[in-house]
Length: 283
Image (cartoon, rainbow, N blue to C red; front, side, top):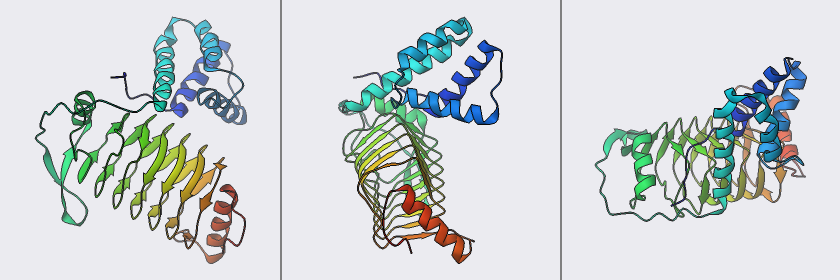
């Protein structure tokens, strides 16, 4: 099996890289310069720049041995990105798991999965129904099998870290305080799901179904989106920025801002339509 592993986000690495370059040059960025520098570094890490990650590594190697851990984290990040093009193919070895149980929404009893159990399953191969009707607490996902089924599951404080998510179902799931970064979501079904305080950064979303989903205070930044369908969904306080947009549907979607005036809600709707490149009446 390929060496899948959890890696830091491009945003985190960019901050550490900027700090190292700043210390080596013995100068400080002004605020505006710092923001610009972080975005430029992240663009290199994500492959959106004319500069390559190898060129950046060569520059950082001049900063001294103290940044060796940072250099390794960057290499691990780049290796994990390479694995996004490959299907996780580890087959279940037949080993059974003794799951603890936890109460979820509506007093449902769910299988409890923490990082230790997920890491074990990723190494041994995921059992059938591992992801279904489960309560994931603080888990960093770095690999998933094709057709992973999170039906009725809950995710609390989780991360999808440079993870390939293909033909997966999150139907009727609840996703809270979760981050998706530098991940690929392809043919993912989130119909009827609930997402709160959940953020997508540097991701590729294609053929993602969010019909009738409820999104609360979610953000999508520096992502590509094509074939994404929000028909009938509710987007409350959601933001989008620097989106490379293809076909996106907002038919019958409710775009609002809790606690805001009617005028402010209208401005929020207009901002979403602009960010997603959708023409027409945002009202």
